[in-house]
Length: 249
Image 1 (tube, rainbow, N blue to C red):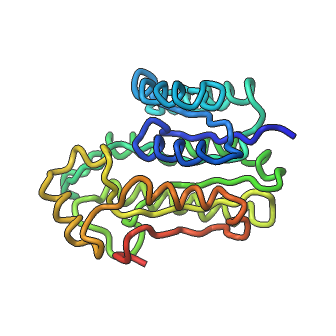
Image 2: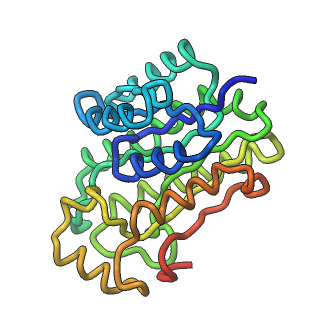
Protein backbone atom coordinates (compact mmCIF):
# COMPACT_ATOMS: atom_id res chain seq x y z
CA UNK A 1 0.00 0.00 0.00
CA UNK A 2 1.28 3.49 -0.85
CA UNK A 3 2.46 5.64 2.03
CA UNK A 4 -0.03 8.23 3.28
CA UNK A 5 1.01 11.75 2.31
CA UNK A 6 -0.16 15.13 3.59
CA UNK A 7 0.16 18.22 1.41
CA UNK A 8 0.42 21.09 3.89
CA UNK A 9 0.40 24.55 2.34
CA UNK A 10 1.72 27.34 4.53
CA UNK A 11 3.69 24.74 6.47
CA UNK A 12 6.28 27.23 7.79
CA UNK A 13 3.61 29.18 9.69
CA UNK A 14 3.27 28.72 13.44
CA UNK A 15 0.17 26.58 12.90
CA UNK A 16 1.92 24.56 10.19
CA UNK A 17 4.91 23.78 12.39
CA UNK A 18 2.66 22.81 15.30
CA UNK A 19 0.60 20.53 13.04
CA UNK A 20 3.70 18.79 11.70
CA UNK A 21 4.93 18.16 15.24
CA UNK A 22 1.53 16.81 16.25
CA UNK A 23 1.26 14.42 13.30
CA UNK A 24 4.86 13.19 13.32
CA UNK A 25 4.57 12.27 16.99
CA UNK A 26 2.08 9.56 15.99
CA UNK A 27 3.22 5.98 15.28
CA UNK A 28 1.74 5.96 11.76
CA UNK A 29 2.54 9.47 10.61
CA UNK A 30 2.11 10.55 6.99
CA UNK A 31 4.85 11.83 4.76
CA UNK A 32 4.55 15.62 5.02
CA UNK A 33 4.89 17.57 1.77
CA UNK A 34 5.60 20.90 3.43
CA UNK A 35 4.98 23.97 1.28
CA UNK A 36 6.73 27.22 2.11
CA UNK A 37 7.04 30.52 0.31
CA UNK A 38 9.97 30.68 -2.09
CA UNK A 39 12.67 32.69 -0.35
CA UNK A 40 11.10 32.47 3.12
CA UNK A 41 10.18 29.99 5.81
CA UNK A 42 12.36 27.15 4.61
CA UNK A 43 14.79 27.44 7.52
CA UNK A 44 12.01 26.74 10.06
CA UNK A 45 11.07 23.57 8.21
CA UNK A 46 14.70 22.54 7.82
CA UNK A 47 14.98 22.59 11.61
CA UNK A 48 12.08 20.13 11.78
CA UNK A 49 13.75 17.98 9.13
CA UNK A 50 16.85 17.75 11.32
CA UNK A 51 14.68 16.79 14.28
CA UNK A 52 12.36 14.26 12.61
CA UNK A 53 14.32 13.22 9.52
CA UNK A 54 14.33 14.51 5.95
CA UNK A 55 12.61 11.32 4.80
CA UNK A 56 9.53 12.33 6.82
CA UNK A 57 9.29 15.99 5.74
CA UNK A 58 9.89 17.03 2.17
CA UNK A 59 10.05 20.75 1.41
CA UNK A 60 8.08 22.25 -1.49
CA UNK A 61 8.84 25.89 -2.28
CA UNK A 62 6.34 28.01 -4.21
CA UNK A 63 5.38 31.69 -4.18
CA UNK A 64 1.59 31.66 -4.20
CA UNK A 65 1.52 35.35 -5.04
CA UNK A 66 1.93 34.05 -8.60
CA UNK A 67 -1.22 32.08 -9.51
CA UNK A 68 0.78 29.83 -11.83
CA UNK A 69 2.96 28.69 -8.93
CA UNK A 70 0.22 26.49 -7.50
CA UNK A 71 -0.19 24.65 -10.80
CA UNK A 72 3.57 24.19 -11.04
CA UNK A 73 3.67 22.86 -7.49
CA UNK A 74 0.91 20.40 -8.32
CA UNK A 75 2.88 19.22 -11.35
CA UNK A 76 6.01 18.64 -9.24
CA UNK A 77 4.14 16.74 -6.55
CA UNK A 78 2.36 14.57 -9.14
CA UNK A 79 5.68 13.77 -10.81
CA UNK A 80 7.52 12.91 -7.59
CA UNK A 81 4.79 11.36 -5.43
CA UNK A 82 1.45 9.65 -5.66
CA UNK A 83 -1.65 11.77 -5.07
CA UNK A 84 -1.69 13.14 -1.50
CA UNK A 85 -4.24 11.48 0.75
CA UNK A 86 -4.59 14.60 2.93
CA UNK A 87 -4.54 18.32 2.21
CA UNK A 88 -4.52 21.16 4.75
CA UNK A 89 -4.60 24.74 3.46
CA UNK A 90 -3.09 27.36 5.80
CA UNK A 91 -1.50 30.27 3.89
CA UNK A 92 -2.83 33.82 4.18
CA UNK A 93 -1.53 37.36 4.27
CA UNK A 94 -0.99 38.66 7.79
CA UNK A 95 -4.06 40.14 9.43
CA UNK A 96 -4.46 43.93 9.17
CA UNK A 97 -7.14 46.24 10.52
CA UNK A 98 -8.46 48.78 8.00
CA UNK A 99 -11.63 50.78 7.56
CA UNK A 100 -13.86 49.79 4.65
CA UNK A 101 -13.31 53.22 3.09
CA UNK A 102 -9.66 52.19 2.65
CA UNK A 103 -10.46 48.79 1.09
CA UNK A 104 -7.25 47.84 -0.72
CA UNK A 105 -8.13 45.93 -3.90
CA UNK A 106 -4.54 44.88 -4.57
CA UNK A 107 -4.13 43.37 -1.11
CA UNK A 108 -7.60 41.80 -1.24
CA UNK A 109 -6.93 40.14 -4.59
CA UNK A 110 -3.53 38.91 -3.42
CA UNK A 111 -5.07 37.31 -0.33
CA UNK A 112 -7.95 35.88 -2.37
CA UNK A 113 -5.40 34.28 -4.69
CA UNK A 114 -3.43 32.76 -1.82
CA UNK A 115 -6.39 31.54 0.20
CA UNK A 116 -8.92 30.57 -2.48
CA UNK A 117 -7.47 30.43 -6.00
CA UNK A 118 -4.48 28.34 -4.92
CA UNK A 119 -6.78 25.90 -3.11
CA UNK A 120 -8.98 25.62 -6.19
CA UNK A 121 -5.98 24.95 -8.42
CA UNK A 122 -4.49 22.27 -6.18
CA UNK A 123 -7.80 20.56 -5.50
CA UNK A 124 -8.74 20.53 -9.18
CA UNK A 125 -5.52 18.60 -9.66
CA UNK A 126 -5.81 16.19 -6.72
CA UNK A 127 -9.40 15.93 -5.44
CA UNK A 128 -10.69 13.54 -8.16
CA UNK A 129 -7.93 11.05 -7.34
CA UNK A 130 -8.27 11.62 -3.58
CA UNK A 131 -11.97 10.76 -3.84
CA UNK A 132 -11.04 7.27 -5.02
CA UNK A 133 -9.12 6.59 -1.82
CA UNK A 134 -10.99 5.10 1.15
CA UNK A 135 -10.16 7.82 3.70
CA UNK A 136 -8.87 11.01 2.07
CA UNK A 137 -9.18 14.30 3.93
CA UNK A 138 -9.19 18.03 3.17
CA UNK A 139 -9.19 20.63 5.95
CA UNK A 140 -9.43 24.39 5.47
CA UNK A 141 -8.40 26.82 8.19
CA UNK A 142 -11.07 29.52 8.21
CA UNK A 143 -11.78 32.02 10.97
CA UNK A 144 -14.44 32.90 13.51
CA UNK A 145 -15.23 35.95 11.34
CA UNK A 146 -17.48 33.58 9.36
CA UNK A 147 -19.66 32.94 12.42
CA UNK A 148 -22.10 35.48 13.84
CA UNK A 149 -21.31 39.20 13.64
CA UNK A 150 -17.80 39.75 12.26
CA UNK A 151 -15.49 42.28 13.90
CA UNK A 152 -15.14 45.76 12.50
CA UNK A 153 -12.25 46.87 10.28
CA UNK A 154 -11.69 43.42 8.76
CA UNK A 155 -13.80 43.67 5.61
CA UNK A 156 -11.14 42.32 3.24
CA UNK A 157 -10.28 39.35 5.45
CA UNK A 158 -13.94 38.61 6.19
CA UNK A 159 -14.88 38.48 2.49
CA UNK A 160 -11.94 36.16 1.70
CA UNK A 161 -12.81 33.80 4.54
CA UNK A 162 -16.46 33.64 3.47
CA UNK A 163 -15.28 32.78 -0.04
CA UNK A 164 -13.15 30.00 1.39
CA UNK A 165 -16.11 28.77 3.46
CA UNK A 166 -18.26 28.67 0.32
CA UNK A 167 -15.58 26.66 -1.47
CA UNK A 168 -15.40 24.17 1.41
CA UNK A 169 -19.16 23.66 1.47
CA UNK A 170 -19.42 23.34 -2.31
CA UNK A 171 -16.67 20.72 -2.42
CA UNK A 172 -18.10 18.82 0.54
CA UNK A 173 -21.43 18.60 -1.27
CA UNK A 174 -19.88 17.57 -4.59
CA UNK A 175 -17.70 14.84 -3.08
CA UNK A 176 -20.21 13.57 -0.50
CA UNK A 177 -20.44 9.78 -0.61
CA UNK A 178 -16.89 9.32 -1.92
CA UNK A 179 -13.79 8.47 0.07
CA UNK A 180 -12.99 12.18 0.45
CA UNK A 181 -14.26 14.34 3.32
CA UNK A 182 -13.85 18.12 3.31
CA UNK A 183 -14.14 20.14 6.51
CA UNK A 184 -12.86 23.30 8.17
CA UNK A 185 -11.85 24.76 11.51
CA UNK A 186 -12.72 28.35 12.39
CA UNK A 187 -10.59 29.65 15.25
CA UNK A 188 -10.80 33.03 16.89
CA UNK A 189 -7.50 34.89 17.26
CA UNK A 190 -4.54 32.57 17.74
CA UNK A 191 -1.34 33.73 19.41
CA UNK A 192 0.96 33.52 16.38
CA UNK A 193 3.01 35.74 14.06
CA UNK A 194 -0.17 36.12 11.97
CA UNK A 195 -1.19 38.94 14.36
CA UNK A 196 2.10 40.88 14.14
CA UNK A 197 0.70 43.65 11.92
CA UNK A 198 -2.29 44.62 14.08
CA UNK A 199 -1.92 47.00 17.06
CA UNK A 200 -1.05 45.44 20.39
CA UNK A 201 -4.04 47.13 22.01
CA UNK A 202 -6.34 45.39 19.52
CA UNK A 203 -4.76 42.02 20.25
CA UNK A 204 -5.12 42.58 23.99
CA UNK A 205 -8.75 43.67 23.63
CA UNK A 206 -9.63 40.60 21.58
CA UNK A 207 -8.00 38.36 24.19
CA UNK A 208 -9.88 40.08 27.02
CA UNK A 209 -13.21 39.66 25.19
CA UNK A 210 -12.73 35.91 24.83
CA UNK A 211 -14.61 33.82 27.41
CA UNK A 212 -11.24 32.19 28.16
CA UNK A 213 -9.60 35.59 28.65
CA UNK A 214 -6.85 34.79 26.14
CA UNK A 215 -6.13 33.88 22.55
CA UNK A 216 -6.14 30.28 21.38
CA UNK A 217 -2.80 28.51 21.21
CA UNK A 218 -1.52 26.82 18.05
CA UNK A 219 -1.75 23.41 19.74
CA UNK A 220 -5.45 23.95 20.49
CA UNK A 221 -6.13 24.63 16.82
CA UNK A 222 -4.00 21.86 15.34
CA UNK A 223 -5.55 19.34 17.71
CA UNK A 224 -8.88 19.94 15.96
CA UNK A 225 -7.23 19.74 12.52
CA UNK A 226 -5.54 16.48 13.44
CA UNK A 227 -8.90 15.07 14.53
CA UNK A 228 -10.53 15.99 11.21
CA UNK A 229 -7.66 14.25 9.42
CA UNK A 230 -8.09 11.08 11.47
CA UNK A 231 -10.09 7.93 10.89
CA UNK A 232 -12.35 8.91 13.79
CA UNK A 233 -13.70 11.80 11.68
CA UNK A 234 -14.72 9.58 8.78
CA UNK A 235 -18.46 10.38 9.11
CA UNK A 236 -17.91 14.16 9.28
CA UNK A 237 -18.19 16.09 6.01
CA UNK A 238 -18.93 19.75 5.32
CA UNK A 239 -18.46 20.74 8.97
CA UNK A 240 -17.04 24.05 10.16
CA UNK A 241 -15.69 23.49 13.67
CA UNK A 242 -15.52 26.66 15.79
CA UNK A 243 -12.49 26.98 18.07
CA UNK A 244 -13.52 30.06 19.99
CA UNK A 245 -13.82 29.15 23.71
CA UNK A 246 -17.56 29.77 23.29
CA UNK A 247 -17.33 33.26 21.77
CA UNK A 248 -19.09 32.05 18.59
CA UNK A 249 -21.10 28.92 17.94
